[in-house]
Image (cartoon, rainbow, N blue to C red):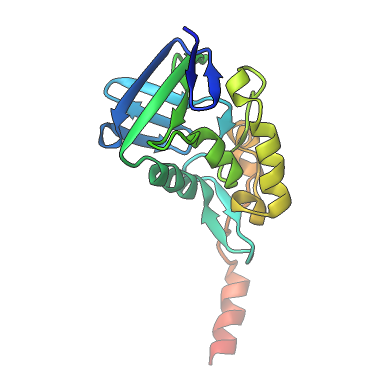
Length: 178
């Protein structure tokens, strides 16, 4: 099917609207509706439990923050334009809020997701530009230090993570606290 939504022409196979209360967020780029899983097309968000450093060099769970950020966009009714399926048989889709704004792109523009296979569909081609803009503005993940989600999935050890202080560090801290 080919249709016009807002200012964009969509080559979606299915377009429908649901109440946000029917959507449960799995992580920053995947949601569930009933028994179906939907991957937000053209973006990649950090995994739950993935650590990053913020602008103050403090560790935080960037996957949890991205998940909460996505949840904040799902308010009222949401229109979903299914573009295809990924290798895990999840439906790849563009999500639009009740004002017609592209939620996928907003995740990237606010720095809580990066462009991912963004040239696969015409609807996602601006995401690389949005990701570059977020990086230049130092917003979201770009405010600190993080490992790209795709790299983290391949090798989680590359992501920054808080380490426990050594016995020596704890002893020194104890001595100076006296």
